[in-house]
Structure formats: structure tokens, C-alpha cells
Length: 448
Image 1 (cartoon, one colour):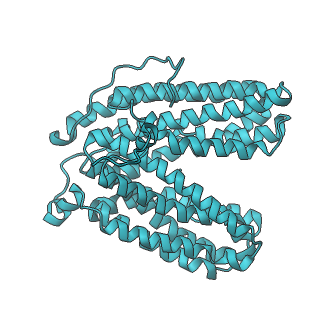
Image 2 (cartoon, rainbow, N blue to C red; image 1 turned 135 degrees about the vertical axis):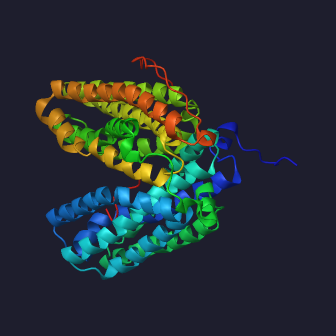
Image 3 (cartoon, rainbow, N blue to C red; image 1 turned 180 degrees about the vertical axis):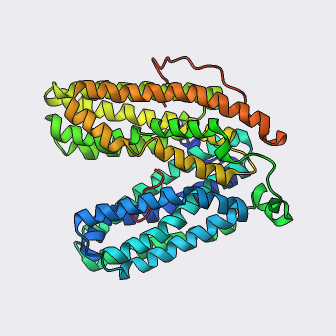
């Protein structure tokens, strides 16, 4: 019998279509609500509760970020060896234990030691979550499911920001001290939810003993197309550097826009990333569609650079509108490259070695992106108009590189991957035309 209160079509399409995809979306929201609550007040927590100076906070977070880079490949091997579902649940419990200990941490050394442990477990969890999602769904469902999970992550981070902001409003050090326990409780609930998920095919292969047999396919380190694809994909994701670092700094230092506009910018990005991924990912059906979205993302990226660049000369409301438009277009770049990235993971990773491939990909994504905050800030703030054009050109070069690297990776997949798992088609050479594009978080670093 149909519901007497039918859901409007737009809202109905925001609800994951299958029971399993709805469970994964809920799990994503649980995870991000806990982390979002802590992250909102993390600066206050680390300085007032842990007792670190601002420079030591920056150093500690840098060390944790480097640790995640170092752990990327080993945790991928662990996921392949013991199964994505098992390692995902273990990682949630491990991270929860770390957050339970946080209120008792005192000083730089203790915090760094705990941050390294949590960075390891969160690296395992991120790798296992991706491997499980790719393994348990049919290739046709993978991109759409990850879009729903992406939306749910943003919903959770928004809820966490609201909760964390409410805690900060009390101006109580003691109240902030215990916010990690709220995150830990949600992580334990998350672990229980993961345990109740169905086993993925790779988990079943482990139970049968098949995984003990050495894989017949080459290591991800021997797949040049995959390494290059993840490197250039990392460069495309430097749109996040524009979003979170360069445009905010530009607004404050190079325009006459009021700083309060920053809240509106980030609010707009959050709303768009909640409501649009389920729509913007629908056009990504294969690698050709993924490359089309790469160029759409490039068009938005370049457009954001050009729009933001001219706000140095504008005044008043025109500046406000243009800065906001520059932020919206870089959000379009984020949404478009998301769908393409999920398709690359779906079609170009060896199904026998998904954890390993994810680890190799994490290494090369980092190499393709970690330099961006320093370089982009210098180019935009110190060099000016020419610097913005160089930033835009970097995105175009990365998109062109992806066009070639995905062809190489697709041929490698056809040659070496198990036939029953291959769903890729070698993409045609891309056409660098992103004009008139259609409408197109990782979670943060551990203990950031």
C-alpha cells in the first residue's frame, strides 16, 4: 500500500535505494557525527585541555599527517590479508579506544603518541571502508552508493559541527575535555553496525582459505597506469586547497569582502555536498563518463580561478557576489571529480588486491596534492593574476594526464585482472572542452 505521505521526487532520490546502501549511509553519518563533534572544538581542546601552544599543535598534526602517508600501503596489505569487514570493525574499536584516552592526555609527547595510534586505525578504517564498498556492490551500483555515503558524511559532519559548537558555547574547559567520549561512543556503535553487515566476497574468500594462495595478478606497484591515475587525481583534488585555504585567505587579504562572508561560503559548500552528490554522480557509468566529468571538474576549477582572480579589483556587493560564485564553482569541481574518482576506484583496482591498490593510490594521491597549500597560497597571494592562471593551468595539465593514464590503467586491467571482475572499457582520448557543464573529506586527519 503506498504511503499516505509520499516523498517528493527530489527528496526521494536523496534516499539510498537499497537496504544495504541505506545501512552504509547511516554508518557514514555515525562516523562523521562523532569526528565532526570533536573536530569542531579540536583547536580549543588541544590548546586548553592538552596544553599545547599553537605551533606545537601544527607540528603534532603534521606528524600525524605524515604517519597516515607512511601507513597507507601497510594498512592496505592488512585489509587484503584479513578482510575489509573485519579490519573495518577493528579500526572503529581501535579509534574509539584512542578517543577514550584523549581526555587524559597531557602535553605534546603524549598527544603525538596517541595521534600516531589513531592515525593507524583511521587509515585502516578508510582503506577497509572503500574496499568493502567496492567489493560488496555490483559495478553498476558502486559510484551511486559512494555518492550517498559522501552525502551522509557531510550530514554527519554538519551535525557534529552543531553539537561541537553547542559545547563550545558553554565556554567550559571541563565540558570540552569529555567531547572525545561522545565520539568514542558513536565509533563503538559504528563498529557494531559494521559487524552486522553482510560479508563481502573478499571476506568469503578469506573464510574459504583462498586468500592464503598468492594472488596471480601483479602488485599495484607494477601498475604504472594506476599510480599515474591516482597522482593526477590527487592534483585534481587540490580544489580542496582552493576551497579551504586559498579563497578564504584571498578574501581576507586581497578583497574588501567582509570576513563574515566565510561562514556563508562554507555553509553553501556543505549544503551542496549534502544534496547534490546523488544527482551529479548519475552521469558516471564508465571510464568515458568519468573522463567527461574530469573535464567538467577542470572547467569549474579554471572558472573559480578566473572569477576569484578579478575580485582584487572589484568593490562592495560585486566583490561579495563574485567571491561567493568562485566558491560555488570550486564546489562544482569537487562534486564532478568525486564521481570520476569513484569510477576510477571501481574499474581500475585489482579485485584481488583492493586494499593494496587503495594503499598505493593513497601514496600517489598524497604526492599529487600535499604540495598545494604552500604553492597555491604563494601563487595567489604573492604572484597575483599570473599566479591564478598558473593554478588553473595545473588543473588542465592534471586532467590531460588523467586522460592518458586511465587508458594505460584500463589496458593493464584487461590484461591482468580476473575476467569475471573486469567491467572496464578503454576510454577514448578526452576532448578538453568543459564549456557549459551540467550541474556537478575524507574525513579530516586523525585527531585534527
